[in-house]
Image 1 (cartoon, rainbow, N blue to C red):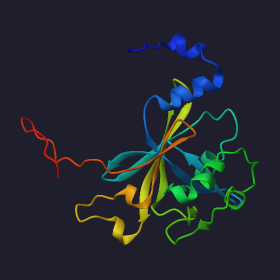
Image 2 (spheres, helix red, strand yellow):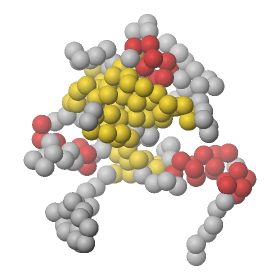
Image 3 (cartoon, rainbow, N blue to C red):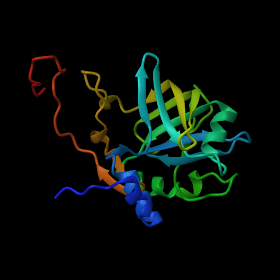
Length: 211
């Protein structure tokens, strides 16, 4: 039986139930750690489930930051330094990655208490997560206020990508499942990514064939 849920029903839910429902009903998202560096040089890392591809020419990624009603270290660090990294979470670092969502005080790096290692390259000052297998370095490009709820869409331009050579397939695809990358529904419900089916490029009047 299909159940109909209205905005009024959602508003009537208990707070935690409402948070879990609204964050998970839209399906699986990639689990990513975003690395930044504060104006005093302190490295910061935090879990996000909102990273999205915005275009390939130039190569842009975006993610959503909650309202600035309280300090948002990731936001302020990006504004201060102009760079950030996206690091895919895999099963081997899942618990450490989840722990980064704890409310650490400003000036404390989440890397050390969470058991993660900052890794720096030559392209920019933001830290990668050394333990991640697929890492993307970005420069701050622009931001957009979503007036409906005061969240902010942060947009970055890709400056480099670090990944195992074997991850890049001849077709250009990168297979996150081959490196145990994790998907998340809501804020705390994690799933293994497994390849299921690849279909040929869609054309009108042509049934997609398995590749």
